[in-house]
Image 1 (cartoon, rainbow, N blue to C red):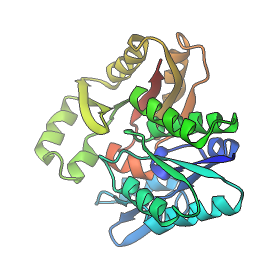
Image 2 (image 1 turned 90 degrees about the vertical axis):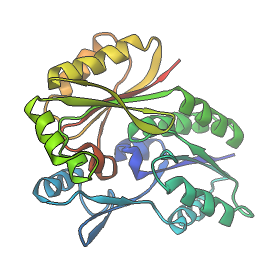
Image 3 (image 1 turned 180 degrees about the vertical axis):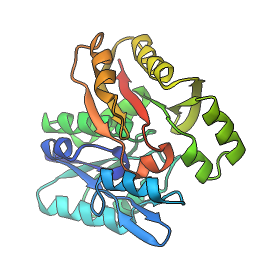
Image 4 (image 1 turned 135 degrees about the vertical axis):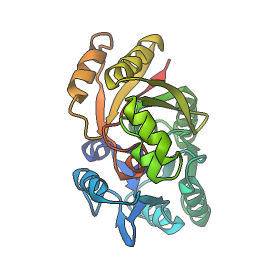
Length: 277
């Protein structure tokens, strides 16, 4: 049996990592005003952030169509896949999983597909896809890989420190006055993803304190695996990774926050994700 993993571009998996593990990525799209772009295909991450800096409007994101997922399912089936597991962006955050479910129904007579809600985003979703791809490569069955994906979803933690409230202000989530006040005080909000939803995880007065909180969160988590760092144009990411390596001996994957998640975090966001054991 050849089980293949499909995820979506909100996972922020580096392309080299996706290629090495035979992971297929179905892209979401995003729009600046009247200009629409296919994620990961029409703008590089650097170009996206450059566009954000010069745009007066917040980019808007859109889920893939069911047809995009169906086309990928059929392509993989033609290439020899005997089963497919989809690791989706949290169903609480996007209609992406719904599109995958509709596509799975469309191919049900030909291709067995299992849809798993990552209950996460960015590399919280990505580390699950990578782990499941390795499980599948080791010979696990379709149902075994799907069960493993559900187990990982329950053990995933994602924490991030935002550097700016500008994106939240542009998106109408906070008032301009509140954003100005918070910026004057150098407040850095901490977010976490819990039960598939983005929730406030605290706030710090400076970036250094926010980063220190992330490091302490990883330290206090106990035994963990599949640690990854996510970052949006951060010039201090190497120092952050080095600090994590002081107590985490395993490999630390570093991922660029792309257009879909970056539309909401803004630039210079830094985060960590991992699986508890």
